[in-house]
Structures are given as C-alpha cells and as structure tokens.
Amino acid sequence: MSVTREEVAKIASLARISMDEDALDQMVPELNNILAWVEQLGEVDTSKVEPMAAVIPQDQRLRDDVIDADPLTGGGRREDVLANAPMAEHGFYGVPKVIE
Amino acid sequence: MTDFTQMGLKAIRDGVAAGDFTAREVAEVHNDAVATAAELNAFIVTTPDHALAAADAVDAARAAGEELGPMAGVPIGMKDLFATKGVQSTAASHILEGFVPPYESTVSQKLWDAGAGMLGKLNMDQFAMGSSNETSYFGNVASPWKKQGSNATLTPGGSSGGSSAAVAARLCPAATGTDTGGSIRQPAAITGITGIKPTYGRCSRWGIVAFASSLDQAGPMARSVEDCAIMLGAMAGFDPKDSTSIDAPVPDWAGLLDADLAGKTVGIPREYRMDGMDAEIDASWEQGKQWLRDAGANVVDVSLPHTKYALPAYYIIAPAEASSNLARYDGVRYGLRDLPEGAGLQDMYAATRSAGFGDEVKRRILIGTYVLSAGFYDAYYTQAQKVRTLVQKDFMDAFEQCDVILAPTTPNAAFALGEMTDDPLAMYLNDVFSVPASLAGLPAMSVPATLNKDGLPLGLQIVGRPMDEQGVLNAGLAIEQRAGFTAQPEKWW
Image (cartoon, rainbow over all chains, first blue to last red):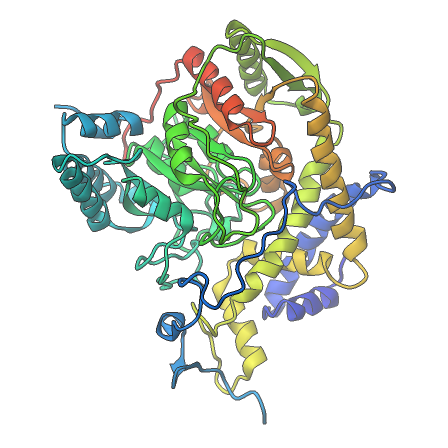
C-alpha cells in the first residue's frame, strides 16, 4: 500500500502536526519507502497466532481504593501541576477561546 | 596521583568506602572532565552542584560511620529521558525545552538513594528515536573515537549516544541509558563500552519520558560487566507506580557473577548470519564463540526463523505506541506553545507540535497514526503484534536448547555523522540485531570484543531468558575476561 500526498496531509491533520507544502513533499516518499518495507510482514502466516498483549505475563494489580494513596500522584498539588504550563491563569490552564 | 576518570564504578565506590580518597575529590575531577568536553556535546545541561552535594553526603555518612549504598561516591551521567526534580528534562526535544519536573523518576531516585551523584543530563536522540544521535534538538553528539587516519566525526550511536560518548570518553564511570530497540546496546557496542537492557519490567518506567511503552527499558552503561551488574542492581526493583513493573526480588547480580560456563549452552542463531555481512563483525562473532567455549560452554546452532520480520514489526509497533504517547504534547500543560496570531485551539496544537517535534519524531508519529487508523489497523498493527508473538516464540523455542544466545550487537562499526541521515530506512537497519530481543522483552547486553582494522570498537551481544540477567552477565563476564578490551579513544576534545 502506498500513501498519496492528500493522505499524508490527512494523517498529519489527525496527528495535529501542521505541515507546509515542502514538508509534505519530503514526507510522502519517505513514508512510502517505510510502508513498502514493512509490507513484507504480509508474507508471514499468522492465521493461528494471537497478537501479543503483554511481553512478560503479569497480573493486573489494584491499589487500595483510597484518596491520595500515593501523595506524589494524588491530588492537592495545583501549584506543581501548573508550574510548567506555558500559560496558567487563576489556577487553571489557559487556552485560546474554544467556543465562538 | 590516581586519575579518577580512569577508574570504574566499583573501584571508585570501594576506594571511597576504604577512605583512600573522598567522594568529593572524585566528583570534582569528573565535573572538570565534563566541563572541558563541550566539543563532544554529550551533555544538555551539567549539574556539578548535584554531583558535589551527593559526594559530600557520602563523605559525611562515611565519617559518621554509616553504612554506604552500592553506588556511594560514584558520579554518573543521567540520560535526559529521565525526569529529574528541579533539573530540566527534555528528551532532547524542543517541545520539552525548559520543562523542569517537580518529581524524580523512580530509577534516578533509586540511584541517588544508593549514593550516586549526577554530573548532568545526557544528550540523546530526540524522544529516543534514532540510532546515531543526530535527531537531538540540542545538536549531534560526537563520538570520542576516530577512525585511524581520518578526522571525520563519528556517531556515538543512539539513542543513548550522550551516555555512550561520556562513558567512553571517561567523563563519567557510568551512565543511565534506555533501550527500546537497541538504544543501550548499539551505542555501547560502537563506543567500546558495556551496557545491559534488563528483562522488560525490571526497571520502573515511572518518570521516564515514554516512547514505546511496551518496549522501553532502562539500564546501565559502564566500562565493565561488574560495574553494570552493580548499577543495574541499584536501578531495578518493583515499583507500584509502573503497571508493568515486575514484582520480583532483585538478585545480587554483582555478588553472584561467575564466568565459569561449564554446563551452559550457548546458542548461535543462524538467521543472524546475513548476506553481505561485514567480515570483521563475522570474525568477532567467531572469536566470541571460541571465548565462550574456552569458558566451558557448549556452543550449538539455533534457529530464530522470524528474525527478518522483527525489524519491520518493530517499525510498526514502536511508531504506533509513540504516536499515542506523544499525543500528550499539546502546548497546554507543559513545554512549548506556539500560538499563531488569531489561532484557535486546534491550530495551536498543530502549530506547537510542528514547531516542537523534529523530523524523525514527526515521521514516526505519522507512521504510527497511519498504521492505527481505521481500515489499516488490522493489516499493519495487528499483524505486527502477531509477528511479535512469533518472534518471542522463536526465542522460547531456542531456549529449550540453550541458556543464552550470542550474536553481534551491530551490523557495522561506528559510521560518520551525516553518512546515513538521507535515508531513514538505512538508519533503521542498524538495529537489525538488537530489535528482536526488545520485541521479546528479553535481557540483552553488549560487551566490547575487539577493534576493527580502522581502530573502531565492535561489540558482542548476549541475549538471555526472561529474568535471567545473571546468565547474560556471566556470559558477558566470560567474554570480557578473554577479550581483554582495554582500548580507549585518544583525547582530541
């Protein structure tokens, strides 16, 4: 399978990466090279194979159902959470206007 | 006077513990070595005060007669993929430039608790995507090695290229690395140092910037097998904050090291012998077999039939996971924001991510987005995950016949910066020997074997059963003892 310029533009839009015309021109053949190469996976008979879910078998663990079981990742750390925000206002993240 | 930069991790630790010298002296000398090696560009930020404070704490603890940790007095480099509290952590990306974590990654915290200090944050391929350290936003890392008779700047490998360059150049006795498809083993091999990726789940991923979560593992890079064993012991262990962390005790790998391989069987995977294989890589592999026979092992041929499909499967799975993981960089919560005049929220996302990600990162996000998109998911992603199952089964079948597997680490020695950047696919092929063990979650290490005719290091790779880091380290030690690799780069920086 190969991708067209329009398809790459669509993928870039889905991935929220703006790309100008030059960037698209460069990316299309690069992606097609890679996609043509991974195509060889189609040769492998996998009709009786389960897709891998976990590389090392593990039981899912449950933590205690309490608030702030781990103080580091629990709540009440607004200052820390906002410290790296490019724009924080009134204790919240600031974003451009979303609703017209 | 002793040159501390020539000492390994254990020698430094034992010397500090014995009172032969102070941790502070060791830290100062290494801080100086780092400060005068700017030409290598191995560090994104240096943290001399962190190294000194950790050293002073160790010296004070010793003076007070307290028990010292397994890394006490050892100054190390920390790959910039680890979140370090109060110290910029960028994954070598523009989008995280200026990000100062308010928390410490589990692995780095364990190292500080063990008495290590931090010389700085090491440069790397951006978001750990690359095999040559040419995708960092903060510039290429130069290998300390040069080809005989050439002044061309060589790659230190990637993605842990700052780590490999710094350890090989004697800027630090050891450094952390992370390995998703070979990012510890490949740079270790081509810079003549030692590095191990443990079993997936041994080291907590909490606080490590995520690339491909089902593959990412941290591990040590140092200049001997024993030093790697000590440092891995300090890094590993169960962490409830990582849902894939293995809840199993950490063996005393360093204490149990044993290079006597009598009764052990080493498998040689025939599919790793590729057409047009570099003759010197092949010769070093042959030599490696002989070394392991000399150590008492029985060497047998094994088959890993799906080897050729491991790399294409990896280049579907890793980008797919990356496209999901990197969706978090949105210009809202941390890192860069690019807000064009009059732009709305969606435009802000797209502009921020366009400005903040490098070309290779964008390429992988786009591949990942494509293979996960409706209509293509089964053909690409599900098929790749099925192939991954087969790759793992190949290894498990092989381990019915052998205890560890021996293979080259890389298909070639270090190449020059710029030599492969025009062809992303050619670059990917550099990971051909390292990716299969990653897909199977197995412990794997690279040990220096020899220099090629150009005077550049070549490494040998040992892959073990799940949880059998000890078997890998023991075989590594057997090679190390026989290879007698003492070469180091001539200082030009």
